Image 1 (cartoon, helix red, strand yellow):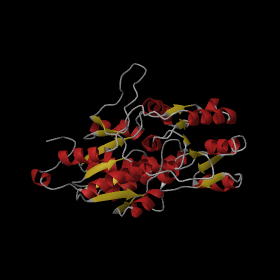
Image 2: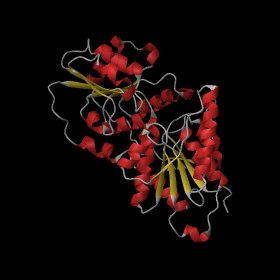
Image 3: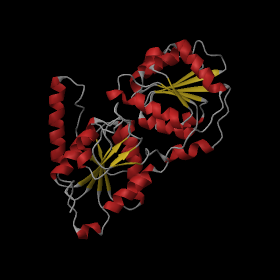
Length: 359
């Protein structure tokens, strides 16, 4: 019997109940929702963990998922008092989860929101899986990978300076689950616009203040036939919208990002794993600007990989000015799009196959 979990032979004859944690940012809850939908399609009972009033709850409701509410908060990078509160919130969430994690399969999609589910599964000796989207594993992945049944990797792990992969555990590259609309929307014709060129700025679900500022700066120097579209995040919407000119469109947040991407001629983006994967599915030229303060500089290594498999270039923020950015955009739009490689577009099926085969 596998020491990681206890499943009776009788129970293996039935499909397992699956508890999924996608708590965090869009890079956590969107892939988690895609996997949840795939499991539901296969008649598996799914419980989706959320925090009350946060985006993941809104998204889960939108897709008709059965939810369970816990109250967990970030630990790393916080002040001492907030770290203490975080520990208490994790302990309380574990106690809540212990009533539903006995004899289930857990799937954690990284970040601080994964900890209560993982700890609860360990206490109840329930099987659990990890999904790691980035090339540099997060702390939750490093901590629990050796105890997981499998670690699903969205991107190939970046080797250390010695050339070794520093992650213990049984891992498999599955690709990153993206919503079906990203796979089908780009087959449609682009909408016609009075502008000849449209440049889309993406900062992720939380927005990106530096990208927002750069977009506002280049609206004054790009040729008049260009339109700028900024998905700026709800936090920055008021100040970005108050500084735009007539050819700049500002959106606080959208659940249907594929519509804006389909109409774009070029994209400027941070290099979160999910955002990069979604952009590569569009076959649009993209300039990745890694967030320089990302933990372990993981966005840099994501962007490095994206430039190998897609029509993408990377430029570090420390070297970027509005003039350099405008020049890079012009260069992207003058080049012919060449498909360099192929990303995996059935990640959710690969993940579901493994879970149902092993349980």
